[in-house]
Length: 205
Image (cartoon, rainbow, N blue to C red):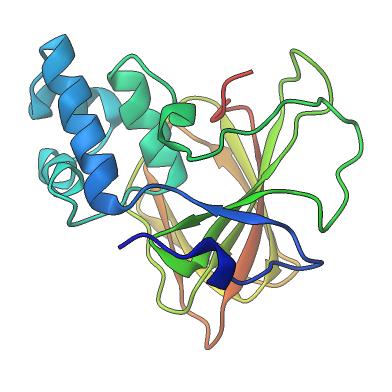
């Protein structure tokens, strides 16, 4: 169910938060768009690098995709992630990003948050996001174009990259081609925070 923004927690240094639509609403929007362009769930799943079963769960509001999977699905449907954000980022292209001023997006729970980092200038190749992951968080298996660089700020995470497992603790990094199937799971006793920098433009310019 949708979160009450006033009750949402404040991230480090007090960043403002907003909610993405509820899982059921996202699913309805994706289903409507898929039917509008005449694609089957199998086609969308293949183009998004996900399983047909997972696409079905998203459409029925049973599961909420991670931000990168939402990006993949949006691409397969000929639209963008911005369509599903209640307040799409305003592109100021500031070279400086101040803690406490960045907007975060709650997904399903108050603890699962994406703190989007503004690109410093028009046409920038690098994109960034700080992901706040609650205890027990596990992402779906996905892949996409580009490359990913991860720095674990806090917690303990298990990353599976192309069938191999890597355990990262605070201060550890991981760099890999995003085309390799990958997923992540919080295996620590507390929440985790991850800095992602990649060449995949999740949010449109």
